[in-house]
Amino acid sequence: MLEPELVHRFVGFVRRASARIVLSSTWRIHDRLKQKIKQTFWLAGLMTDLEATNVLDWEKWGRETADAVCLTRGREIEEWLRENAGSYDAWIAIDDLHLSTVMPQVFQGHHVQTSPSSGMSSEDCKLAEVLIAMQRVSVSK
Image (cartoon, rainbow, N blue to C red; front, top):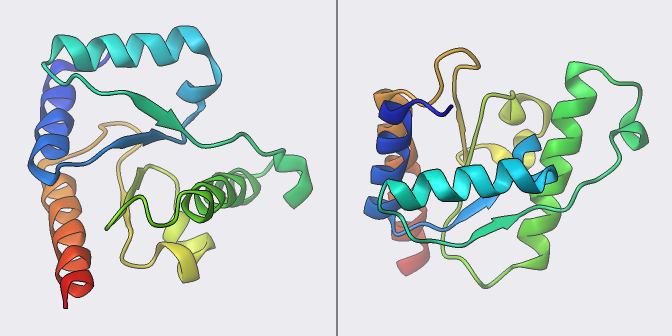
């Protein structure tokens, strides 16, 4: 079960940012889980389609370590960004993995690292909004 407070916080962020959701977590791999999260968002009043990154083989990047998993997730997001260039004006990755550390050239200024145990905090939400706003300001100049 997804925590109602966290769902409410995330849905509020998506609305305020006029964002679209692209899943890169393991939720995207299983149709049942993807449908559950979509239904949860719908019940929270967010009627949106869920996009997802492609699934890459983590074994390409080495044995299964935290860094290999993180690097694979980062590469999946990077691939989605490349394939969808021009279809977004700003982007951030909200993830509990340390994407900014493993791939700083891609994620610096585009990553909000959440807590694996408590999810997206109010502070994380504020940071996400600031990062999106800063990117949109720099694009409009």
